[in-house]
Amino acid sequence: MRYIVLLNIFMSILVCQEHLDVLIQEVLSGSRDSAIIYLPMIEKQYPHNPNMLFLKGLMETNGEDAMKIFVELYNNHPTSEYGDDAVMKVAEYYYASGLYVQSAEWLKKMPIYFSRSKHIERAVKLFLNSLIVSGHRDTAIFYSKVFKRQFPSLDVEEKISDLLEGYDNSKLSLKDNIKSGSEKNQKVLKSLESLPSKETEIYNRLLKYSLQTGAFSKKENAESQKIYLISGGFNARIAELYQKSIILYVVRIGYYNTTNEAEQVGKKIKNFLSLDTIVVTNK
Image 1 (cartoon, helix red, strand yellow):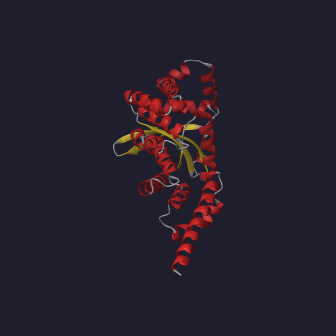
Image 2 (image 1 turned 30 degrees about the horizontal axis):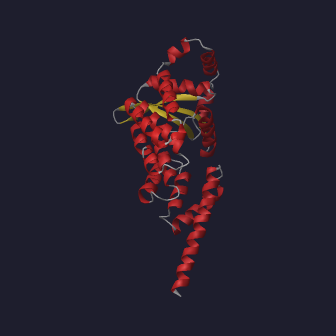
């Protein structure tokens, strides 16, 4: 009798795992309808299941709350199926929020604990870039040599060279970029002229969500990223955020009615410009 009970428990957990995996893949593909229906029931029955936590984090529309769920998942279930995904989600949240040191601390877990993860190439690149933009250039170069030995197939040498060159180029101010008169910057100027009218902006602000690509303590760095996004065809703007006594200049794109709309644009930005984004709520 006891064996039968244990078998039933095991089978129910197995079914739950399979169902969760299906729901997770649906959400990652852009479909959230089934997860909206089933997640509350699954959470009630399996409140500490790591796959459930990952799905819950994916469904959370508030970036900070989602990050906390992924932190909980990693802290309590670091070796679970989605442990590496959770680390990347936390790191990407910090990176898009301009907290590059915190992002680097999380990304460092990837080569140490998840060296075979499908995310490892992106993690290495994002880790090196987090160090560079936070002013730890020499540390980034040191780690690039470590990663070159650890991951010989990733061509780390080329990645660090591209990142350093890209960062140095991005330090040009908005004014300097426009004055240079290059064909690319003429397109930027044209894009700036075609930005939405005042009336359109007022309407847009009624929409609930935007995408955020970065947060900077120096405005010229935010302006450089804004130019980069506009030149890629995305309507970027700069907003000021006040955190205690610090002003952060955040770069945001568009206004969207749903998180799904925002996430679809975020995928395009990732594919075209290799920039990570988070969905934020407009206030």
